[in-house]
Structures are given as structure tokens and as C-alpha cells.
Length: 271
Image 1 (cartoon, helix red, strand yellow):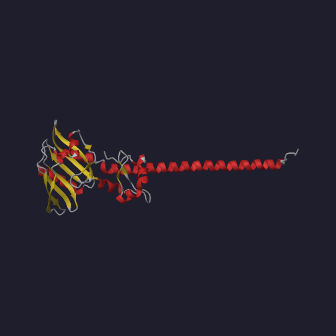
Image 2: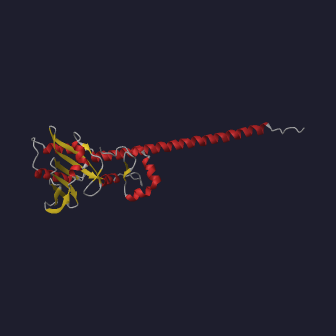
Image 3: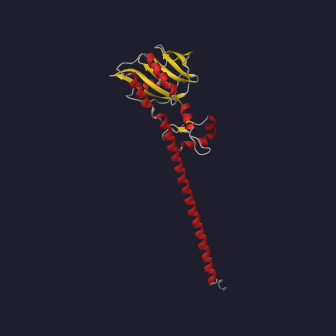
């Protein structure tokens, strides 16, 4: 029989040392990998939380004062227990819109569907007088005090507007649901308040803005060198993006990834 090969003690010990060294290196690499992965995950979570906080602060800073502004308007128009003449109310709304940058319109709609309103306009403020029939006379109030007649507005569906119905059904100030605006077809939102005398609704005060206002506010946020802010609805759908081109660049995979960012949903609802 052939005797088995014998290895020297030195070779055996050296082999064991090599194996232990390789195992140690492998262990260190595995531990380093998991530590790095955990560090990256923690950093990403921290950045996401910081960005979400900044977005929330910006939205709150811009839109949170609006209900208080509306209550102030209510106090001014009901001072003395009686509503002022509509012409006087119109002047108050126009004056407010001259320096108000957070919203696009202010309106008072009485129970008989008459009312007044003030809207932003490239050349000043658009003053609107709403007749009970639904047609509205409009004129541009320029900064120099001059006035220019504007085309009449068809507001016959004003009483069916979601923000009007929301005000009638709610006590105090409330944000309406997002709705399609009849004048320009854009999606809009309003903060509204029904002015009551006992149980009777005398009319509705409303202030509102379109999605473009929210978009411009979010676009002013800087997220790193190339980051962008997208606003998501409760269903995860993208409601506001920096631009149509930015949304298109996401593609289906990118859009699905944005929807999974739960932290990005927080604080985007002014209500």
C-alpha cells in the first residue's frame, strides 16, 4: 500500500493562516458593504425628510395665511351688522388684489347669484360685477387709476361651482376640492367662507388660485443641482410637475418611482 502524503507542520499552519486571512478579508468586505448600504439608505432618508420639510414649509408659508385673510374680509364687510353696497365691496376686493400675490381671485357671491370679484390681470386688476342672470360685466383697473372695458364673462354656472356648494355645506373657512374652472379650463382650488346671519346664508366669500400658482411656488424650490419637485395627490397621481417636459422625461418607470415616495406627499395640500 502506498503511504499517504505527509505535510509538514509549517505548511499546515501556513495554510490555516491563509484561510483565516481570506475569511477575515471576506468578512470585512461584507461588513463594509452592509455598512455602506445602510449609510446610503440613512443619507437618502435624511435628504428625503429634509426636502419634504422644506416643501411643507414653503407651501404653508404661502397658503396657510389665506383662511385668516378670508376671516378678515368677512369682518370688514359685516362690520356694523349689515353688508356694504356691492360697489363698496368691489373696491375693497380690487384694492386687496393690487398687492396680493398668493392668490388669483377674490369674490363675493350673494344668495341671489349677484356679486363682485377681482382677478389678476396682466395690465392690473380685472374688476367684475356679476348680475343675477349669470353674465358679468368686467373692466381692467390699471395701476395709474385708469379703466378699460373688458369682454363680458359668462358665469351662469357660478351657483353650481364646487367652491360655492362647499361653503354652503360648511361652517367657517374651508378649502374646496380641486375643480375645473369655467373661465379658462384650468384646475383650481379655493378657500371659502359662507357669511351667515343666524341660519341664513347671505353670500359666500372666496379666494382662489389655479394649479399654475402652486407650480410656480414649487418651482422656486431648489433641490440640489438637478432636483425637481412634484406634487402628488392622495391617489399617488402626479398633480403638479415643474413642466410638461419634466413629466414626460420621467417615463412610466420614473413616474411609478415618484409615486412610491411617501415623504413627497406630505404637506402639499394647503387644506
